[in-house]
Image 1 (cartoon, helix red, strand yellow):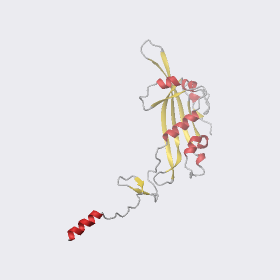
Image 2 (cartoon, one colour; image 1 turned 180 degrees about the horizontal axis):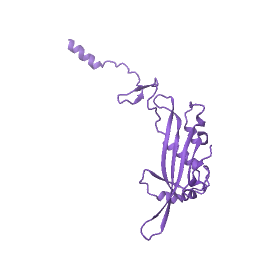
Image 3 (tube, helix red, strand yellow; image 1 turned 45 degrees about the horizontal axis):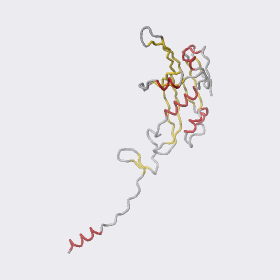
Image 4 (cartoon, one colour; image 1 turned 135 degrees about the horizontal axis):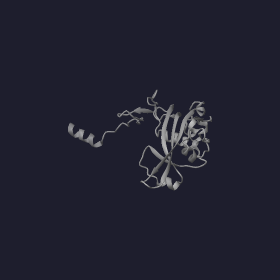
Length: 206
């Protein structure tokens, strides 16, 4: 795992991807960027296709982490509250099995999210969840940003992995009327004529 590069704004902020004081990082406006190899993300490796290239564990995810502190007062004269935020971006790719053609392909990952850093689980549970672009996390003085990056990659994975355009359709699949690939239908069994229809035909001939 490479060491993160640090901006001048974060030069005074101690940072370790596996264990850092997230509260201090956000209060001081920390800002770091770097990369992490897939081999350091075991849950991503578990999602990787079995037939992925041998170099897959060396695939790199590039990330940025930026801390923000905002001071707010609920109303004039009220105590000023400090709100801490963490902006996270992750870019890379994961080798997955296409559910349409059953071949391995690289799924691009490009995700970004702003988190409000809470001091406890209780505070996180009580936070309003009406903003799709804001999530909450519980901070710590020994916070693992590596696990957070891994979480973001997992959440970015598609529930039904597919090529945008498959190089070929697997022989066990066919295209349905709506353009979606569906399992091949079993051959129809030849229907035997109804005995009542046969009797009706005999009566007509008489």
